[in-house]
Length: 161
Image (tube, rainbow, N blue to C red; front, side, top):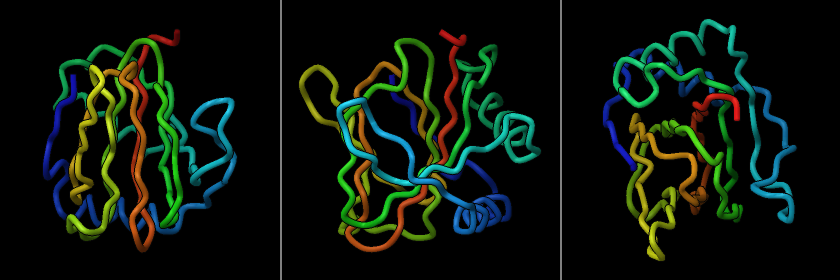
């Protein structure tokens, strides 16, 4: 299951979130899986932070799948142009919410999220203010932009297992 929701936030809140992403203090400390090298930057958002509480309410108001599931982690991904992330799954159960935080997009920029479903690739374009939610067990990966920085908000919903 993959669901897409365009124009997820109103323009004012989206602009604030994009600005927040640009100036967050990223750490380059994570791998897509154990055998991979470090890729991309991560800024963890506290689950007690007002920003998280606002985003969690917005997600739960639009996606029935997570209405009664606790968010276990919230963060912003940063990918520098030319980075090569790996395919991975986020969890064996639950849902992953992603939101694209770029200010503009055209098809030649790249940057899609690739999903491997039944031996076929499906790409979701990183349209500004687009949100997607998907089963966290679906193998997927980010693709960096040809030029510039790619920011993506991620919220991970599962029952802690």
